[in-house]
Length: 129
Image 1 (cartoon, helix red, strand yellow):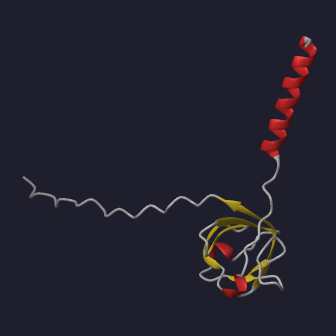
Image 2 (cartoon, rainbow, N blue to C red):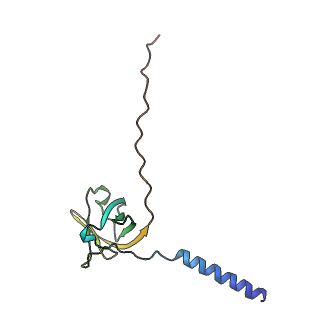
Image 3 (cartoon, rainbow, N blue to C red):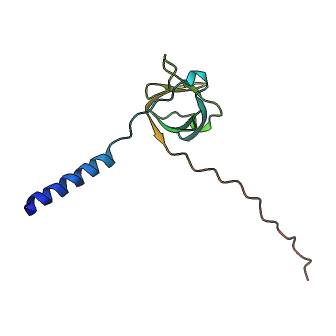
C-alpha cells in the first residue's frame, strides 16, 4: 500500500468519526403521556424543559420560541399527539401560553440539586472593654 493510500484511509476514518460526533441526536418520543407517562419535569430556561418519563429516562424538550412564563411555572400541561405520545410535534401548555416543541431528544439525568446548608452559628459579641 502506498503512503498516499494509507493517508487516504486515515483521512476517511477521521472524517467519518467527526461526522458521527457532529450528527444530531435522534428525535425521541414518550409513549402514553395521556395516561401518566410523564413522571417529572424541570425547567432550564424559557426555551428548554427536561422531562422524565415513568421509566425514569430523561428527555430534553426544546421549544420553537421563548415561552415567557415558563421559568415561573408551577404546573405544566403536556399536549400529546392523537396516539397519546409526546414528541417534537407536541406542545407544552401554560395557563395563557401554547408552547410548541421543535425537538425532543434523550438526555442524561440532570445533576441533583444541592441541599441548602444551614447558616453557620454566630457567637454574640462580647462585652465592650
